[in-house]
Each structure stands twice: as C-alpha cells, then as structure tokens.
Amino acid sequence: MIRAQASDEGRPGAARPPAWPWWLALVLCLAGLAMSVVLEQIHFKIHTDPAFRSFCAIDRKVNCDIVERSSYAVFLGVPWASWGIFGYLLAAVLSLWGLASRQRRAVAGYGVYLGLVFVATSAVLGAISAFLVNAVCLLCLGTYAVNLLYLGCMLIAARPVRTALAEPFRALRARPSRSTLVIALLAVATVGLLKLHPSYWDEHALKSRTRPESPTLPTGIEPGGGHFIGAEKPALILIEFSDYECPYCRHAHMQLRALLNRYPNHLRLVHRQYPLDQSCNSSLTAPMHENACLAAAVAECAGRQGRFWQANDYLFAEARMLHSRANAEIARDLGLDLPLLEACLREMGPRAVAFDVDEGNRLGIQGTPTFLIEGKTYMGQLPPWVLDRLQAAAAGRDSGASP
Image (cartoon, rainbow, N blue to C red):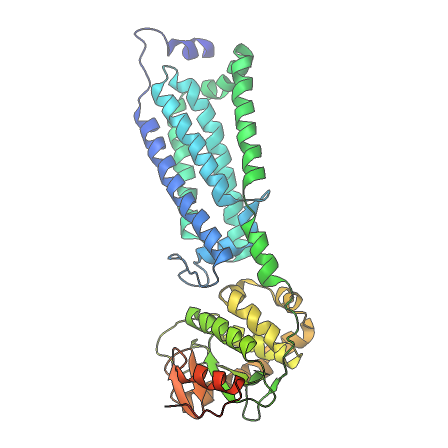
C-alpha cells in the first residue's frame, strides 16, 4: 500500500503535491543564508577589529558579539556561521529540486532529514548559548526559527511522511551510482570547507592574548597617582584619562605608544582611569560602556602584581568581552596570581579606580580620551605643540612651545 502511494505521484493524471511549501522553504533558506552571512561578518570583525561593535550587541544578555567571541562559535575549525551558509545553500538547492521535480514527495524526504539536522543543531547551540555562554544572539535565534519552519515545510511537502522518509534509502538501492556521486560531491565540499576556511580567530588570539612582554622602559607610580612609563627625566609629562572600552581611547593609546617609542628619553606617559560606566562613575547620566569599570579595576589589580602596562595593552584589545571571561582566563592571559587578582577586584581595584574618577571629575573631564599637560586639559587629541616640544628636546634645543 505504501509503495502504491509513492509511485502514484509521478503517474500521468495523478494529483501533484502543492508547490507552496517548497516556495516557502526557498524563502526561508534565503533568509537563513542572509543571517548566516551577517553572523560570519560579525565573527570576522569581532576577532580582527577591537573597536568593532555590532548592531545586535544590545546588552550583556542579548549580545551577538559575546556569542560570536565565544569558543563555542567554532566547530571543527569552522565558524558555525559558515556551516550555516553551507547548510542553507544545500537546502536552497534541494528546494529548487523539489519545485522542478515530478517526484516532490520523494525529494521532500531528503528535506525532512536535513531539517531534522537543522533543528537538532539549533537545540544544541541554543542550550550552549543559554547555559554556557550566558548570552543570546538575536540573529542566531532568527536562524533557529528558520530551521524549525523549514522542517515544518518539509513535513508538509512529504506527506505521507513515512513514505517520504523511506525514499532516500530506496533511491540509494535503485540508483547507487547517482547517489554515490551526490554523496561524494557533498563530502568534497565539506572537506574543502574544513581545509580552506582561514583560522583568523586563532591568529588574532595569538596576537592579542599571548601574555604581553614586560616593558623595557622605566615604569612606576606618580606621586599624585597614576601609572607611568617612559623617561626618568622627561621633557614633558603627559597624563591621559582613558576608558579601555572607548574606541577613540584605543586609537589614542596606539598614537601615544608610537610617540613614546620615538621619544623614550623625553616623554613620560601617565595613565589615569576614567571609565564611562555608571557602575563606578556617578557623573554619567546614561549607560555607555558596561565593561569599562571592570577593565579599569583589572588594570589596577594587575599593577599591584607589577603588570599594569601589560594589562593596559591587553585591555584596549579585549575590554569589550571582559564580562564573558572568567577571572582564571584573565589571570592566565596576563600572568597574574588568581587569588590575589580576585581579592583585589573585591576592594582595592575598585577603590583605585574611584580615586582616579574623582580626580577626573574634579578636573571637569567631559569625555575620553582627555589629556592633562602642564595643568591644562585637552579633550580628544593632543595639541600640536606637544610634538614640537618633543622634537626640540630630542634635538637638544630649549623649547617652551605651548599655548
């Protein structure tokens, strides 16, 4: 009886199954493909551009960036987003095949199996996101919905389902050469994806999370507060009030480091904490950088173990993801004693940050980065005369250039 139902579909005059489930499945595949492409772009950016923040990084719990930054975002050396692109392309081809075929129920059997794989994958990734990463990704949720609806379309197209599910095995026995060719092509495509996909996240992790080397320039703490690096007898002392989660501060950090490398015997750089984060800076009227206070406290605690400037470099690259990192991971990356770090983060670190924030508020700082040079504040960028002063000092000339 089952075989008679299967064979009736292709006979002349037999009622052909409706096409709408296949059209809807095709639309769903294109939607899933689009979301997977965006997720792949986010995954790439989040691992290669420390200043990047995606449109779906809404807060700590609803944050695509945290999910894509997680180690669970990669499977067998390939991001899940890329597996999604591969899967949705395959499903789209299957949908087009179903629209063109006179044996739609038979083709739907393949679609049901593919849909089951999609839904099972969604369940596993959803559980990982909820219970291990502790954040959800809106685009990922969108793909989960697509996967469930795709399976529904295939179940409708496959009715009676039992007959359709048996069709792939029947085709394997009836047309072994064709089935073997299709399986071989899928295997080649899968191996190609595994072998050819660049591991950009590993390369970035090696650069940004390898334990930073100790600085070769003199370092210490200024009498008025703040960690310094640079000349013992400087021609110019430059104090920066900065926020590790601020992209403009990161850019300024790179400029200042280049300037310090160029004039190591004439410039002293002093770092003061001014996180734009309401949890430790009461002068803010709206939320801005949710990780900034924690990052500043980590830096101060690292300083108590003699590794402030290593933490300084590390945090400008990693601060946005700090809440998704365990203290043990941070301590390992920076070469810190974990119990000392955790004890410091409970009291001494936040107290040191509060001291700098109070000083910044006393100076009337309105944003970051802000530079304090010879008693005057400059917001956003260094005044041109700073370079003139350093060049004159390096040339052995006495220059009092300043506004």
